[in-house]
Amino acid sequence: MSDRQALLPPGWAPPKGYANGMAASGRFVVTGGLIGWDEREVFAEGFLAQAHQALLNLRAVLAAGGAEPWHLVRLNWYVVEMDEYLANRKPLGLIYREILGKNFPAMAVMQIVRLVEPAARLEIEGTAIVPEPPESSEPGA
Image 1 (cartoon, rainbow, N blue to C red):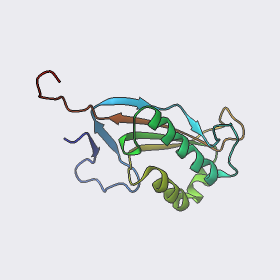
Image 2 (cartoon, rainbow, N blue to C red; image 1 turned 180 degrees about the horizontal axis):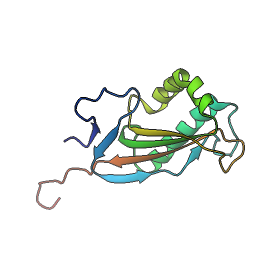
Image 3 (cartoon, rainbow, N blue to C red; image 1 turned 30 degrees about the horizontal axis):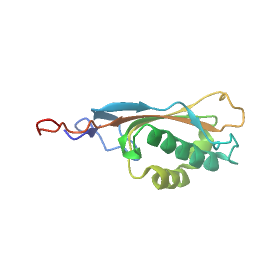
């Protein structure tokens, strides 16, 4: 097995834009819930702009932990309005690929009553697994 593998039970249709499950080994990097504000806590305007900023924030936290977007094995999305998410799936997919690439980990999207920050339209949390570097076989290394 490579450092990560999408899980697809036999006979299941391949999912579009996510994985049913992931298997990986390595060092965990876990983010908190990230929302669509910048480093000064200024919110972007609207759902798509907040999604864009939240994904940039996710990528920044991953980088601070030594992880890259392709190390993601799970994303949880919490949205205030599911209809807002569903109505923006195509442009959201473009934003996602621009920031995280063509990496589609296991994902869940849940509608919630509200977020801690009243202006937030969504919150995203991620789990990445960074492969351990191969052990050197050289003596003294």
